[in-house]
Amino acid sequence: MGDIQNLNMYAYCANNPVMNVDENGYLPSWLKIALIAIAVITVVAVTIATCGATSIAGTVVITGAINIVAQTATVAIAQRNYSKSEGDNSDEIREDVFDAVADSIDEIVLKTAWKKGTFASGTWAATSLVPSISASIQTAAIADASFISTFVKGGIVAYTKSPAVSLAQGFAYGFSAYYVSSTILCFFDEGYAYSQAEQYGWNPR
Image (cartoon, rainbow, N blue to C red):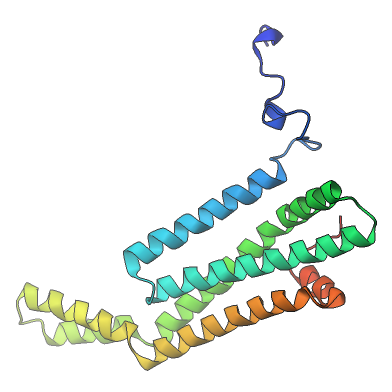
């Protein structure tokens, strides 16, 4: 093991043993939340920069991020209300909220990713992008490569502007609007906040 004097005895609490604790040996709640937030922001930024905000991929990541934020906020509101009802002080309430969000966020992110993946693949298949472009390329096989390249790009642009895609994107943003409005309602209805948060994996702290 070596000389114990050479070890950082406070690494478990980020060198702040007065303010931080690590009761179970896992990442601090705030750090877990921060890492997931950074990952989500990175995915959104890269996807928008690569595919554009109005593409299917852009719609998926933007609405997914909105849904994750709304659902974690719902869990935070429910836990804050519960901790206040238990008579906790402000420090205890803050700690409970961080812990509750950290416990629920894995399920929230995984469920959101699954739903958005299903949405993207379903939209793609429903509009039959690949078969239509493939058939058209075969028809234009006698044309030169530059024409085919231009044709494919044009087909993709037409796909992203098709009515079916616009309708699917409208549904995606509609569901996000529902999650946001649901979160806002949680501020005014404690019982509703509890029932919604439980759907997202919340367990009262």
